Length: 158
Image (tube, rainbow, N blue to C red; front, side, top):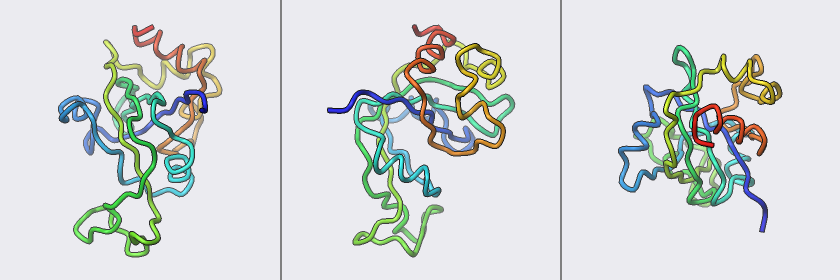
């Protein structure tokens, strides 16, 4: 069995926020709509049940880490790609040959105060986080165990 991994999942809060996740039945939802091959590969091949997730609100001012979640179902085909009425429809993806994947996550804990990107950028130990680098737009990003612990501490959850 592999050891627990950590991830940062980005979402625009106008599309889906951490508060929306908290309102879901059992505070659980699927993470669909990823349409980047590198992020898809992470969801399909690396993100596993029990992994920790930092829920990051992007495209807001300021962008923030809002809380944590846990992966409760590993990668499986994203069937929104097969639905012509979905904004995530992809006619090249089929049930026989799925192109896109998703995972299910469950809310864990909200940060007392969301952690702004600027705080991440100036916190020792987080200098190498992908989210702190200019131009790092990937919606699913790996987080090291050390970075995870620092962020929990910043959020008052350690």
